[in-house]
View 1 (tube, helix red, strand yellow):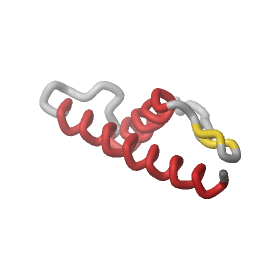
View 2 (cartoon, rainbow, N blue to C red):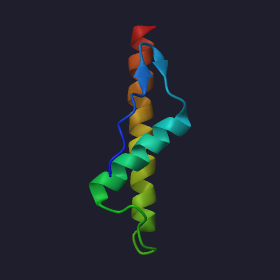
View 3 (cartoon, one colour):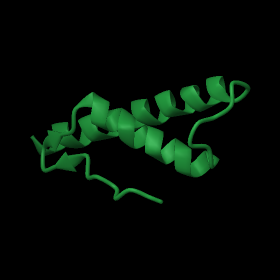
View 4 (cartoon, rainbow, N blue to C red):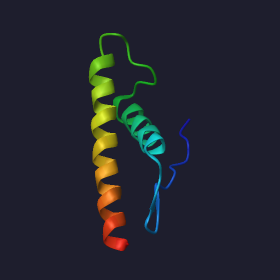
Length: 68
């Protein structure tokens, strides 16, 4: 049912943005309980994925800068 969580950072190497977005999608699916949200919930679902991906990318970039 649940895929293994992939590490998005190894040392100062950060995963590409598409992998960060996939991780955000997996997280929002788990939290919301939706694999595919209905049309009624699609905007909120997509917005949540975007926000989680953005926050995750910012975190990874900041950590990578500090380790470089």
